[in-house]
Image 1 (cartoon, rainbow, N blue to C red):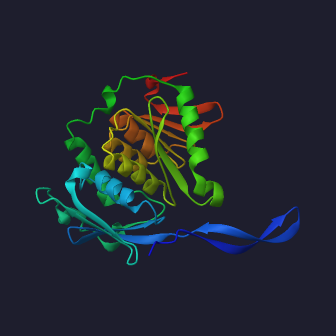
Image 2 (cartoon, rainbow, N blue to C red):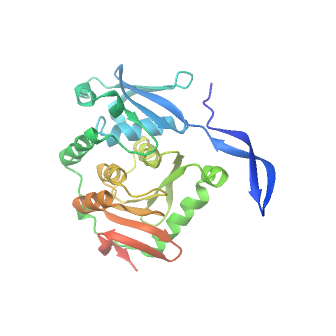
Image 3 (cartoon, one colour):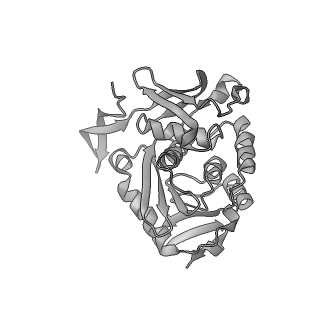
Length: 272
């Protein structure tokens, strides 16, 4: 059984002061239980596709894995809404770190990670000896940022069909599209593209992350964990995202629209 992620509904639309009966497409969200070494660690409310990439990206972002090679087995039970992951025997996994209350073990469509987990992610970034985002000296032409956002918009087909989801993409520094995913949660879409690159054993240190969502602290933390040096969005940055981007040396760009953008941190990497 394949989980359905969209369906047709009857709607009444008002156009030019007239009511019109139409058929519309809406997205279906699902609660997916992520189980690691027989331990249920989180319930993710998400668009139920690209679940392998979602699981890998999420486990990486919160520090349970450092690479796709840490996973021995990964299976998806779509009928029961479960992703089952078994780690290699030599991979340490302290389930006590995730023993928070039940509300902190639900990832909904509005937040990236519950508050008690943010310090855990920061500690994992600190432990990563090869995380040198600030050392990235490459300059990127602003035209590549603009074109990357346009490519993301053109390729987020579910958003174009329904208007009900976020998109995230990863590009190389020349503006070539590497990965694009969609989800009802902006943070889930980011986990999915990060997960795909991990599965394909791609480097992150020479990539650009683009997103349709607001640049919150949670979203920027995920990029910092992956050592992605540049993040660009159609939407605004919020204070927590700017603060984290500054702390980790990330170039943070918001409101990329038309021929303008707002660069909040490390503008030296972007050529006008």
